[in-house]
Every structure is written in structure tokens, then in C-alpha cells.
Image (tube, rainbow over all chains, first blue to last red; front, side):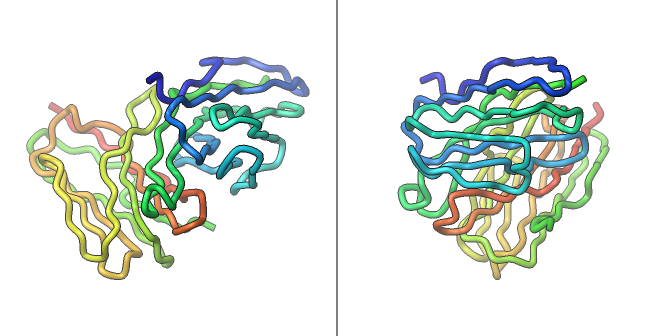
Length: 117
Length: 111
């Protein structure tokens, strides 16, 4: 199993450009989440999904869109990049709370380091 | 609103010393996870605690969940340079579908 994969690993954008960060998992996990991590801070939840076709907003959703058409994939779209979106982005997956007995033990991808100029 | 507060934020110690990291909240969680993250990588799960008062040991690391399931601690005995990293706690609530993370504790263990 590859686990959670993310592409690209690094990306530089100009203000106003759009792009999609890819995330895929091969563990048949129901739950998937996107986080951003800024210096000196932990992980802040952007969007999450509890299954194919179901998404919801996290703490910091503005400027980002997601969709979940399959169990495996959960892309994150930046609509119009801003310097404030410079960050490291992590995708994570886990079994459902029901299957995981309330644990939500997450597996993380290696991250995408995004710089917006 | 920061639901999980970790302390201290930074910790620099000599090899062989002991240390404790705290994760506190005013909210009750169904479970709490501890992760470790090394530079340039994603967080990796260390342990999950689910029962109030539970204590789990992972070699030199001891994890405890508070009786009321609102707080947790991580104690490292005889720290080694390989323990260096960012330690994150995360709380989950039943049926919520998401976790809340603390801001992390950056640990540096000097040889």
C-alpha cells in the first residue's frame, strides 16, 4: 500500500492563480481531511469528508474548495491564490468513527509546500 | 477558538533528561491522539487514549488521559536526540468526522 499520497510536493504560484492539490489514499478509509500548517502553529482543518459525495467545512475554509467523487481521491482547489495561503498543506485519511470505535486515527501524506508570491 | 492547548510550546533539554508535555482542553473528547512530526514530513501517530485515567507506555514514552477525558500528558524518560521533533495532540469526538489539533510542542534534545 502506498498509504496517502500528495502531489505536487512543492509549488510556487502568483497571486490570483488557481491550482488543485491532489490527494489519494489506497487504504479504503472513509474519512479524509485537508489541513494547513503554518510556522509555530499546529494543524488547522480546512475541509473534511466523511465519505464519497459528502464534504464539510473546517476551521479555515475560505478560499478553498473540495469535492469527493470517489473514496480514494480528495482534491483541494485554490480558487484565486493569495500570499496568506502560503503554507504547508497536509492531507489525512482515517477509518470512520463507527469502524474505528471513536478514535479517528489519521494517516498523513508527506505534504505540499505552497508559496504564493 | 483554540480547543486544545499544549504546553510548553518549545522545550530544549540535554540527552538523558526527563520531560513532560501537556495537552489541555475545556471540552470532553471521545479519544485523544498523540502524533510526532519530523521536519519535512507529515505527522505520524504515536498512540491513542480513549478511557479516562488510561495510561499507555511506548518504550520510554508514557501517555496519560485525564479522568474527565479533557486533558492528556506525554512523559519522556531519559530523552535521546532521536526524540527531537514536533509533538502534536489531537482530540476526536464521536460521530464528528474530524479532529482538533493543538499547536504542538517543539522538542529539541541535545547530545
